[in-house]
Image (cartoon, rainbow, N blue to C red; front, top):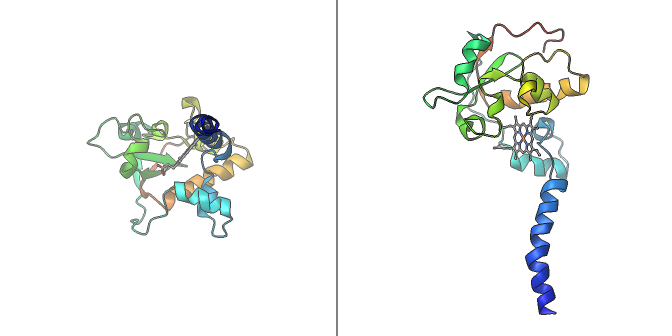
Length: 170
Ligand code: HEM
């Protein structure tokens, strides 16, 4: 009986957490879940893993950046800030250098406008490009939700001047 208990403890627990992690925890939180005010229990639990909105943001700046200029802010030079552009708005994400800096999970979006990848919930390098105009409505909504998520958490430091022509702007 005791050995059964020990067996369950040793194998059961890790298995439980493995299954829970892979199948029950939400994939990357849809940003909407974090920002809605009417919350279900599920939304409340999502909220705990995402950083909350901030009260200390500065007024948005509209300093011009080209996509080429943006590349130097990809986190590879620790003396420079890290920028992520979404739909042409350049967000300063330096304080989350653990995530956006070199080797970070979302470094793929640093130093560029990766709007398409955000809309598609994709971390593939080929999707981290600015031309989001051909996204279907549901992915456009995801992209807009990310824009809103970032707007509430990071300062806008400028605007990209050479985003490819988009049929459906914000
Ligand atoms: C199974 C897959 C995924 C898991 C478990 C996951 C988990 C998470 C977690 C826990 C956070 C909060 C992290 C933090 O605040 O430090 C986060 C944030 C984020 N995730 Fe994911 N994610 C996944 C996939 C993706 C994908 C495919 C994308 C592509 C769009 C993505 C984009 C993001 C972004 C942009 C943030 C916001 C980071 C911030 O600035 O606070 N994630 N994810």
